[in-house]
Image (cartoon, rainbow, N blue to C red):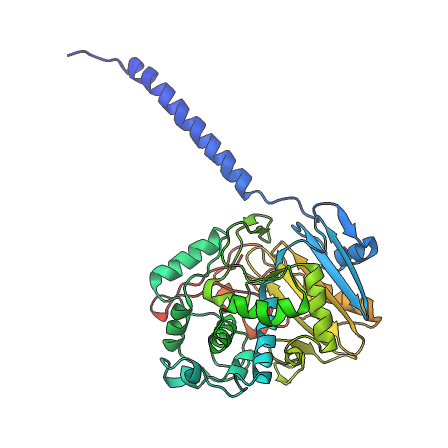
Length: 418
């Protein structure tokens, strides 16, 4: 037997230990780079109107901003600006998508395809119980009794969704069949106003089924093509799409939302959204009546089909906002004054401060949306298990936040949208 001294053994182990140490150090460095947020402040050169961009920066404040594009509409005049982006740069618009879905609903009523009282059971015969009795108008006005987000169909799906959220990827998955099957298994509560992404996903897919088209094609055929919004679309997949950034400045994969696309999947530009803003204000957009307030939502706001109207001022502001894992958006206008603003950003920090730009445009004071943005919202910088529970109580600060699906009641796992 050959004897090996402790010194010889340590000598042979040294290269291995050194290699492990070097590898660990390299991995640590890589992780540090990946987890280090980008610098605060807007990135890139100013494009378009410098005064408008200066006003936008002042309204939005500081943060881990990346790129932003803004369009200001004042009567027949449209002014655009941006930093690191221009009026043709593509962004996820998040829950501004709901204003398109709402317009499709109003347009479908005009076409005689549905009525405000059309029940889900008439469109989806496989439904029964309370879900079958939910009306399309209750979905459009956020008082259907459906939860804020759909329960995941299985524990595995819920875990996958949560992991996707923490890895800054799209947490939504599943087909339309999955969505409706989940709907059939979901408890429907009372009709107290409550912001629901689930409800708008169901509304959009119901309108698509009635029309005989996919939601993607429905948006194109009935809204974007007639209005000449050539850069606005519902993506078929995430392949080739630009990504955004989390509130802390980390890269976030694009969201296409699967069957929940009608709640927040549209991508657009400031130029195209200015077309949408003007056409809605002027009443020339398909389904423009969706923006008209119809019922109280909370103490300060009334709701139309998707659109919120803050009434405690003259003139009132009609608005919506949006947020995904890496983008945020705001669109608001005063119909009486004919002025409005759209702001798109590829950072998950709330851009609700853009409401100040409406007062700048109209020459009158505009109220800030009240309340503190909840954890998991566009202005929250770190993951939280509270995000799936955010809804109507904070709707005036972040009604447009798109949250990931939650787990079934048997294994309630709540995820984060950042």
